Image (cartoon, rainbow, N blue to C red; front, side, top):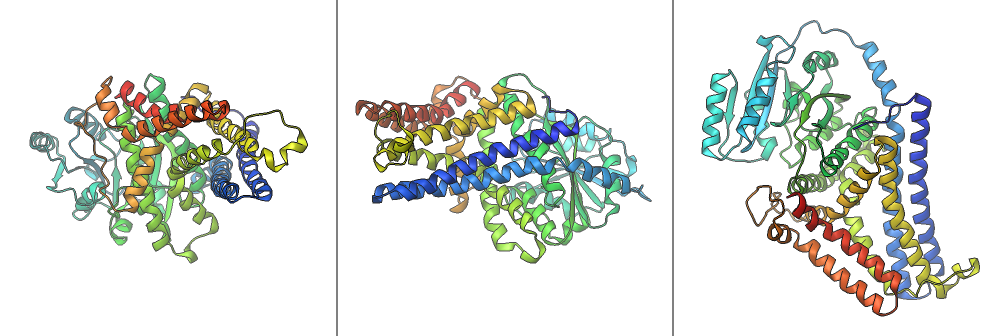
Amino acid sequence: MHFYNEDNDKKFSIRIITVVIFVIMAIAGIGFSAYLIYISHSLYMYILAILFTVLSVISGFFNIFASSFYYRSYFYEKYLKKLKEELKPMKRLPAVAVVVPLYNEDIEQVEKNVLKLFELNYPKKLLHVYIADDSTEVQKVEELSRFCADNNIRYVHRDNRKGFKAGALNNIVRILKEEYIAIFDYDEYIVNKNFLMDLMPYFSDKKLAYIQTEKMYRKSSGLFTQSISLFDAFFFKFIQQARGSNNTAIFAGSCGIVNAKILKKLGGFPEYVIEDTFFSFEADMNKYHSLYLPEVYAEGKPIRSFTELVRQQWRYNYGDTQFLWYFYKHKKPKSMSPLSHIDYITHGFGLNYISVILVLFTLVSVMIVFSAVHFVPLTVSQVFQQQYIGTDLEIFGSIAFVLSLLTPVIITKIYFNSVKKGIMIFLLNFSLAIVRTKAAFAAILGKNPSLKWSRPEKRRKHDIIFAISNTKTELTMGIVLIALGLMATMQHNLAGGVWLLWYAVLYMLATMFMYKYG
């Protein structure tokens, strides 16, 4: 992965170009919506115009603030440089607990990665390794217990999963005597042994609740796996840096250090699906500080299957949707700037924006196709005549679709020098739209946060039955869109038919990805 790294003037210019691209998209959508309302003279067209307006305003909001992350991140390097210049050596090194939460993980990988933690550059008498185990498989519990006993690792096992990862961490926090807690996931392998020595001096700020470092997957081959890695890369290279200077950088659950005293004052990790986001918010609301360091100290196991990706995205959007309710209930307006409000709102709505909005835009597209006349050559004066509104809508829909495709491609090309990965990200977002939407509704309805599958949790490449049974909704939507596309074509609306058929293919990609990658 090659991150764009030219001189500062050029980097700044690239960010300005990024902002311009997003702003143009926002203005075009909102401007066209206003035009539709102005020329609509029937109830049906008013409904379409209002739907377009709502979607355009939401899209415009997120596009503009997405661009602001790119812009704001540019200044973070200067912000960190100033912090480092003011940094003073610690008078003494405190005791640190390094905690690894587990749940029925691969024992061999756990042992390899946990033993690597003992190589961290830090006084051994001050470095204590813990395993917070929620495993339910008896054999794994026994093996882990023996492994920990043989390697001076403190092993804590629970017989239930109350509170999930947060519950497991809180169970250990209650018995900890150490002043700071470093957390790593089981699959994360230390690649820079200076993790503790580099980070601990920042805790001379007694109000600092946590430090988060950049998370990255290990390098891997294959377009699918490399493209997934860019999901995190965009977040850590731009969003986290932009939010870092505003004290709203998120603790991302691992590859970070938490002040144990502050954590206990806040009542531990909030026991939600994405406990890290909730904890970050609580720390901010209670006027504690946070810090994001864009350095990689450990690399995680890359996601190689579509099943893994779906599970991850389900958990993220379930948790993000929960967080929106939590945010509105617990926010303290006097403790927050307008920018902080926006940072948290965009975080909670982020995956909903690229899932629910995609689904809604698809439904509006169906309405457009069956309200539209055929494509015809238009003069400038005809564009503003009511009888051509359907054609205008169809043209706009096509332009909006092309822009939505080109934007991730352009951004990925600019910052990561890859067109292919940008296209793959676009396709993956469509293939994940339904499952993310389901996760949002599951969170709203208070359903079980786990995602159920029709088969055991194993990678099943080239298993068509598994692929079909676990993407039934996407397949059904695709089939319906194919039928509607063919219907439009038979009514001599070729453009509308092709439009809907293209949408059908995009949604049915979920089945293809599940079949190809397992």
